[in-house]
Image 1 (tube, rainbow, N blue to C red):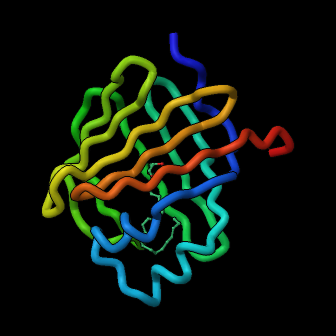
Image 2 (cartoon, rainbow, N blue to C red):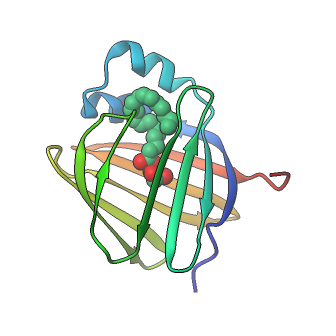
Length: 137
Ligand code: 1AG
């Protein structure tokens, strides 16, 4: 059984968010702001649902879903696109495919050495982030 993703996680590293944002067509101005943000993930699991909140001093983004159940996702405040998303388990990885205008788009979360790992990918660009559990929240 995979480790629980629930809790508050603070970003400790981020690589190639610039390439990922360029692939999404984010403007220069927003990229400069977004690249500096210290992101936090607050993950809850009520029942068979997941709620992943990404928070920052600039904007927040929340997605909620059930595994193996396709849903419509509007990436509000990010690239503002409508995608059809499907989250599945691939081994110990929670993997989301985001089908829409952008090809090969999605993300994967997994836990390794008590850290929450995230890869976000779009059209060949991969942003890799690692989060550390915040036990005070
Ligand atoms: C996500 O996480 C969303 C996380 O799907 C957003 C992370 C980085 C920003 C990505 C693209 C930037 C687009 C526009 C820039 C404008 C504002 C940046 C605000 C970022 C804070 C919300 C995957 C998964 C579940 O954890 O969502």
